[in-house]
Amino acid sequence: MAVAAASRLTAARCHRSMPRCTLMLLLLATATAASTPAQHEPLASQPPLGGSTPRKGSLIVASTSLTQLGRGQLRRRLKDEPPPRAHLNRSPVKTGRIALNILLWWCLNVVFNLANKQCLNSWPHPWALATLHQAIGSMCMMPLYLPLPKAGISEDWTPIREFPRLSLDDLRKLLPVVALLALGHVTSTLAPAYGTVAFSNIVKTAEPLFTCTFSYLLYRRVFPTPVYLSLLLVVSGVALVSTRDVNFSSFSLVAGMISNAAFALYSVRVKGVMSRSLREWTPRATYALLTICSCMLLAPLSCIIELSGAGSSHLASTNLPAAFSGGNLMLLLLFTGLVQYLSNEIAFCTLSMIHPVTYAVANTLKRTIVVGASLVFFGQRLPVSGLVGAVLAMCGALMYSLSMQMN
Image (tube, rainbow, N blue to C red; front, side, top):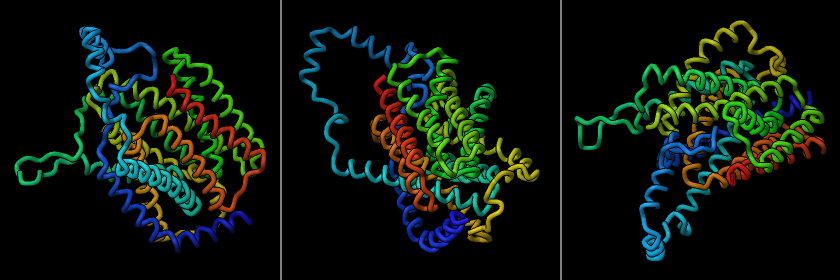
């Protein structure tokens, strides 16, 4: 009861002080996402997760051109040509933009996790909330793919982002991937609904365990020893938190693990599907289509579950007075969906500007910040053993990311 009272008091304070800060944050994030160009390569050009054998592509073409080039010519070219600009020191402007992107990404993700939990406390319908997230994201992305008139040329209408062509065969191949994305998203919403934000984010660090498992089962890919040692740290940390956390919830643990498995299998399958068939697809176009299809899949299912009352069962928040209601609740729901969309957009922009290792470190720090911010915001605490487990899980996740990049 004390925790619930503290949560309601904090929510009231947050409600009074949030509008100005969040409005400025949203305006800044929107401007950054709109002004940052997408620099991702298509998914098909990225190495497939499932195997170490190179496919026909840029790597083989590069090898052939080097073979045709004489060794003497190659030495002279390497001596005469200056190093690429990408490897030189970044300008202060670009460094500042990268730092701004990372800070915005962290802030938006923290705000989303806290606001999402407030939504669940005031409106205990996790299935409907997960669908609403996807619907708001879809509405934000769809205008980017609608034809618009070019400046000065009234006859020529082109979209801001090109939407790839899609055949019935492509849809058939994408359906399992869409189902995995929908399952992963709804269970990641269920995890904090049944438990705490901190606990669900610590459980989320176990996702690499499922990624390695599915990579071996589907493609027989074996990773180096440091990767498996990092997974041992993650599993040990999650187990320690689960057994020692006073806010432990078995429903939250199960939902978090299902989300980990779904997203891990999704990440493995989506690269395989894209590399085989949809070669012209960019990650942003793929993410937009999968989000829209996932929303269409979740909408009827969430209606059935919520109308039957199964969606709000076993939720502790159903017995608590709502901190938000009426128009304030509607604004909070819309705000949460918008923040999630902007957080994903900023994450895409950030990944296109920095090295994957830097992104992995930033992602681990982001999860650590979310755990710490949620503990402070909701007035919760971890015992010493739970804190040790959280540190082990975070360090294991960071070690896994770095080991995978070196591999």
